[in-house]
Length: 355
Image 1: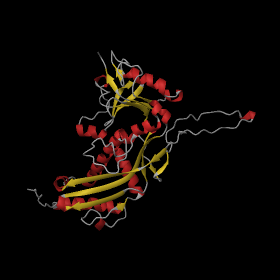
Image 2: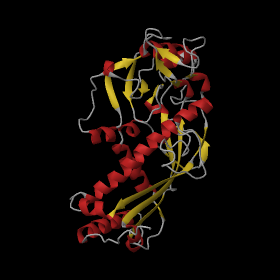
Image 3: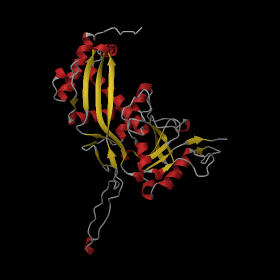
Image 4: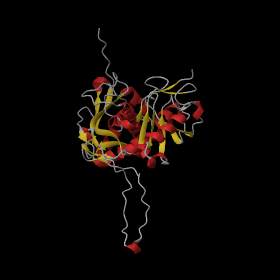
């Protein structure tokens, strides 16, 4: 026998809070408030200014996304922007000898193609939750930040786990979001494979990079140091902005105390970047969520970019009483790139071997 869900109704307070929230969104996007948030809602294009503000707010909800580039671009297909400062610009010309002063482009000279792919963020909130949240005096900012935080964490997950662009995608069937888009790690595989270490030739364990007393390297510090010296060009090796990005399995008690870890587990999730007072391979170490196990990425944070297409965000907020919920349908065209290949390396298949 099929169970039929009883129809519910939003409380008066929750209804007023929801309508105030959607009316504000309608005003920002110059849409008739009657067409936003109700059962007859329509899809609309988010105006560029509110779109950029939403991206900025999202970066405030994610420490990691706040550290990298999240620029808007006009074209669906194009060339990377070259946003990081990688070249010295200090020089001198002997003008007495008729030498000409030579200006230098401080940004990356590498250019790679990018392709933005549609990403949908379909979010629901049950009536029962809105009833509880409606009493919050900051209901509108609370709702906005809850939505942006969820989208931010998914973007980080795609960035480190995305390997392909499936025509349709179910996050329940693929919780790593591997089929949502090609992320930064996949970018490395396709554009910078010579700076990826997946195994040590004639190593202790075939197909692995082992650390420990019986491993290929005594510890992760030695491993990262050696890879920096061997895999990065000389001008990049000592760049003070290089960091070692690691996951939970690489940073352990040796690298604590954590210097910015929130005490509240929910705040820890929201912060998403944990920095230590130690270094790996001579570089500052940061721990991020969703990085695959056994991996270290060395790069500059301003070398990592998440592009989104300006004027291409679509949104629909709708009341769905037949399901006792409200929904916020979002779609955006997005792409994950690195600006300069020479400032990035990756080590994978790292395991500990002590015997």
